[in-house]
Image 1 (tube, rainbow, N blue to C red):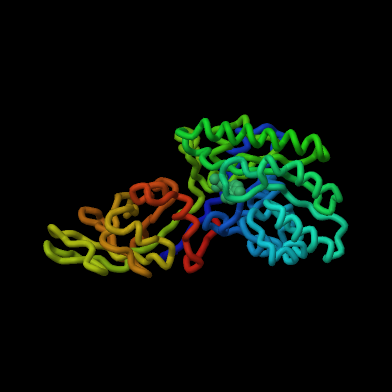
Image 2 (cartoon, helix red, strand yellow):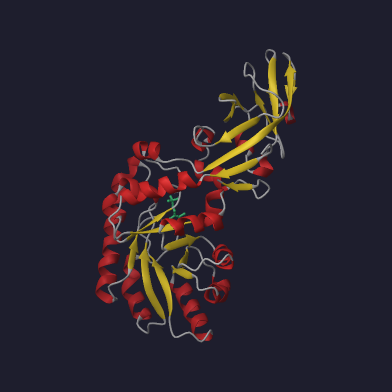
Length: 363
Ligand SMILES: *Cc1c(COP(=O)(O)O)cnc(C)c1O
């Protein structure tokens, strides 16, 4: 294929899944996180692959993402991390599992469940242990138990989220979050049935805090081949590989500029390649002016000037290449982590932003 495209590497996905599994006890469930189009790949085909590997639970961010999976025939439990109250009816109609994170959400959801004529509906309770984004405070759990007494909401899971499990400098804070979560686990074990899924760890948690695995974990970025753990990271394999082609090559001379705002000024003669990919495809302007490199026939070519909407220019001086050649924007041997634009971005952001204009190929 000789145009811009994104390969989804099934073998890499499987290898990453197996690496994650190898860190966990056999009875620990992996909740496969496929939000944001499975981190910029393809939610439906990745979900199907994960189910083939034996994954029993999936998670998405928003209700519409869950509906998309249901419409594709996926019938496993799907947890919705950030359901919105005005869309609860659609969530129930599609048998999605909401995260209940506040008394307001709880009351609203109970109402919709009752109106839909259901006696009970499964939910996961979100507890805030220090991220301060969503969730009940530990001090609210007593009151929460009372409001759950009528069993309209059936607690299938209790979870919390790490703020900095990938940042070694915050180890003490992460341990504090584990302690807080332990309090919530204790509370729910006393007040509720025994088969609740307790899950705290995201990818970095799985890799760095095995003691926090409980009976389930939520694996996102590690499935796609990235993490924050210096050793384990090397074993993970990027699933997405993004390719573009060289549309045109030209030589510029000292004093010539390249691209909008003339952001690149040649100090000497250089060879410039124009690629078939730009910010409308997801390569943000933050990566311009040398803040990222692509691989041209195995050699590193830095971005040159500002990224354009549909194209970008790279400096291929001294690199053997021709018009029509395929360029690897990122992929297995050229990680998206090299696109951090001097710490102003992270791999998560780059990979989840690859737009719908780029065709996906499952391989
Ligand atoms: C996105 C997300 C995850 C997955 O996190 P990774 O770091 O990608 O593994 C887990 N839990 C919640 C609540 C999330 O929003």
